[in-house]
Image (tube, rainbow, N blue to C red; front, side):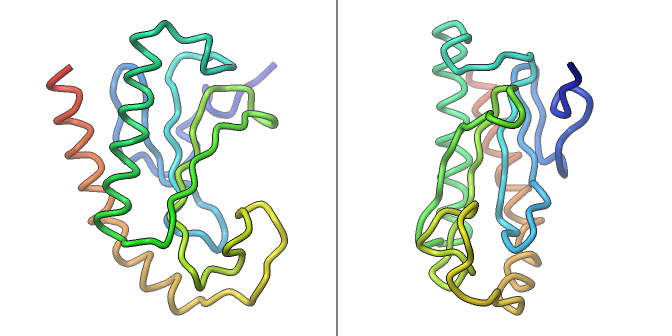
Amino acid sequence: MSCPLCEGDGGKRVWSGPKFRVIRADEFGFPAFYRLVWQAHVGEFSDLPAEDRVLCMEAVATVEQVLRRELRPAKVNLASLGNLVPHLHWHLVARFEDDSHFPAPVWAAAVRPRDTAHEAALARRLPAVDAAIAARLATMQAGA
């Protein structure tokens, strides 16, 4: 069976290390939608050795902290589903009260029209957010 996360980045690569990578996903209507993708093909979080579980969650927390600091969202949603792509990855989505689905999940039906002006303004800030994520993860890996 082919795996899209083994065959490609799955989005714009923000940072990559030996154990995981962080990408900015191209999710329509949600410009600040990131994924942390484990490099090795494992299906479940519990498939990882204990030290890799710690590393994975530290990385998730680091990306979340950067999103909160840089974007000041109303909430950061975290999810590890893997129903469609059974390769361990975490969704990290900065959510804003004016996004089309808030407070519902991004996968639910929209509750209001998209605010494309806000989405565009947010998208212009993302290169700096990407750089901040990369810098923090590089520092985290150097200390490991």
